[in-house]
Length: 81
Image (cartoon, rainbow, N blue to C red; front, top):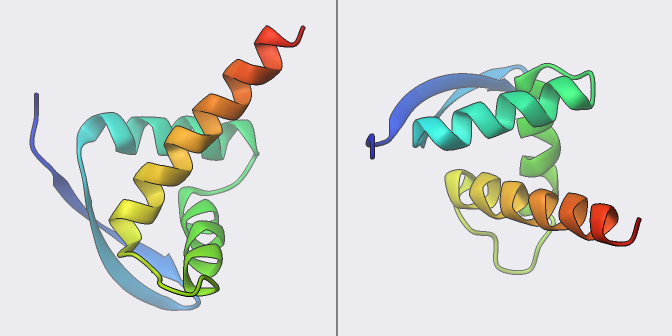
């Protein structure tokens, strides 16, 4: 398994670094493509939700959790027919 890869992402006009394993970068790109968004826009959306929580986690963790929840939603949708 490959270790984390650090990339720069623009959020609200400023660059921030995010370290994710390649499998998560790939999943994030697929989710952004599916929603017809740039990766930075999807990350900004995830970040806004993260910041709005009572006890926000770091951005990389928020992205991983969002991706897992997104996969679970899609699987549930498929299972429901």
